[in-house]
Image 1 (cartoon, rainbow, N blue to C red):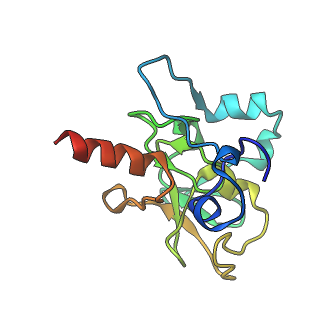
Image 2: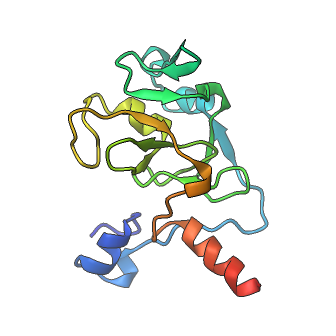
Image 3: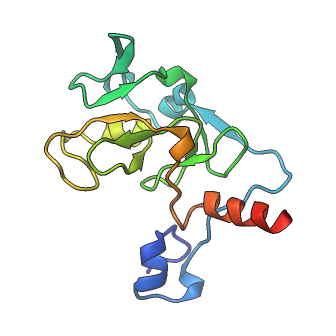
Length: 161
């Protein structure tokens, strides 16, 4: 395994490697935390904005192939490398934390807007279902991945009460 790379729960506990190879997710101490907007992300990574566009159709923002259907414009999207009060939803692909996240209709796995737009194939990234749409995830039934900071935050909150 490469030194200090982020890994999933499965890789951490079931694959080869030692504890020194694994970087735990960043925690958010009481320091200044940088959040990034979608426009800043495009500028920093020199991405073509035309590839990352959603059109307003029937009250929802949709991409060109209608794979994504969301009520949040991309300009409202903010994300951070660490878990904050504003960014509590995690993407299991890019390991970033967002204020809004999408959910696949076929297998109900979460994915961020950026990852969903970057995957050019119309298939689901998780289960490879041919017909896949990503819709806004219901915040009341948030999916918590066991290796995320969300799980760590939940356990800390339970210990405090």
